[in-house]
Length: 401
Image (cartoon, rainbow, N blue to C red; front, side, top):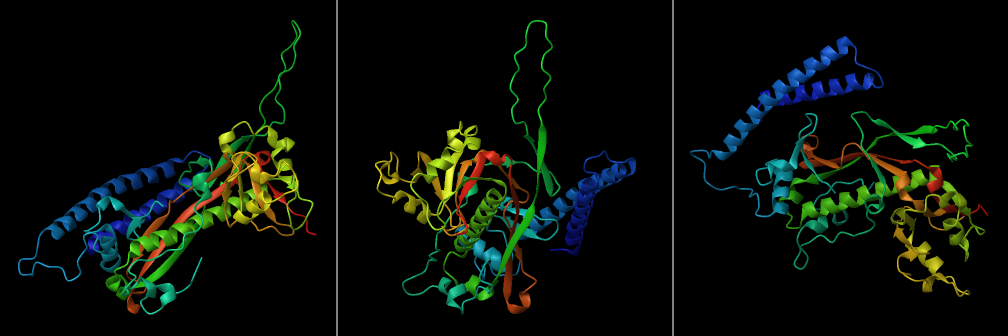
């Protein structure tokens, strides 16, 4: 990689950063003439840089396609015939020739990133420690990683309101704050009733969430296991857990307490009906596809095991992963049944907004821990959740004693 290429990429990153700061400073107003002029200069220079960077990348492509005249025609480190092997080869060497070019994005001059559309043990992955990488080295009978599967993202299952966001970190959502809005009876020749919607706004702010792991060259070179598949699953599960925690934390903080249970340690027969029948929630129950429960599996089965009444939940129609006719989604991020716990969530999930800035993004850093013979793999994403109507979504909560 030439010094000129690195310089061009860094200059582009600096200009993009400056343009973002310029527009963020003018949020809510028009640009001044001076700001507009500087923005035009930045855009013009970015167009020029795009052409120069493309020229450099084209030359790099040609270099890879032309075999050295005196070199033997073999690779000491084969790229591999499968996507998983090509991924492992790239993680080890940085050679992305075995992967499609479209799988890489330039990230503000940081380097070549591999985007996965898809905390922790603070140790490195290596071949010497079974708990954090040793099991990925092949044995006589076991050459695949068995990744423990747990919960997946509630945001992918529930019909949340997905909000597009601009270049800034904050966003606003207009909401109806009107309590009634009914029409008024008007007699002949009388004046019409004057009314207008009471519009309010909810505000959110994107937060960046990140993690990284250091992987040894020995593991990347010696492992016959699917390192890529393991990392995708490992990061994907962590991604889902983080989103689930953010979602339920927002509903617990800004939703409505539909029911305070009588007991600090149990849910009694008839109490789930009080949640579904809440008067404030009733106006939002018309869209049945958006109505759902979220709770732990144990909580759901505790409710289903209640007996002593001919309406017991276990014999209700469609009594699988449903409760009172509505689907139940399991998440360990919902609290366990205990004093003061919010262990049951319910309502119309379209009244929870979900915003994402950077999607889940993966970067390879071969320099920071190179002195230890390791490659650093980094992931990050930006997200936020906002309850837009408190009456539409909420929870059941236990008393403190």
